[in-house]
Image (cartoon, rainbow, N blue to C red; front, side, top):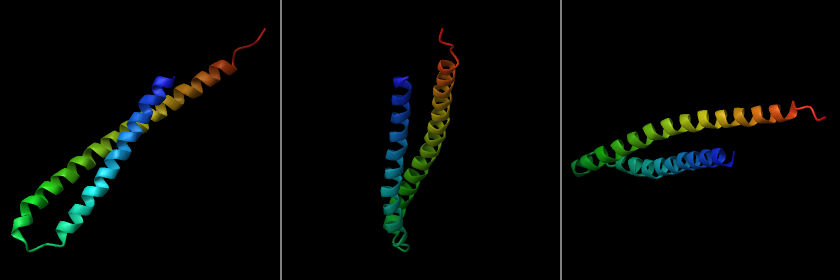
Length: 90
C-alpha cells in the first residue's frame, strides 16, 4: 500500500513542478509580448511559445493520469477497509 501512495506522491510532485515551470516561462512569454515590433525577438517568441505548449500538453496529461491513479488508489484503500470491516471475529 505504501508503494501505491509513493507513486501517487511522485506523480503529484511532477504536476506541481510542471505548474511551476509553466508559471516561470509564462512570465517570459508576457515580457516578450511587450516587444511587439522587435524582429530580433521573433525566434525567441516562437521558442517560448513552443515550450509553453509542450509544458501545457504534458501538464494536462500528467494531471489526468494523477487524478485517475489517485481515484484508483482511494478506491482500493476503501475496498480494503470494507473487506477488513466485514470479517466476523469469532
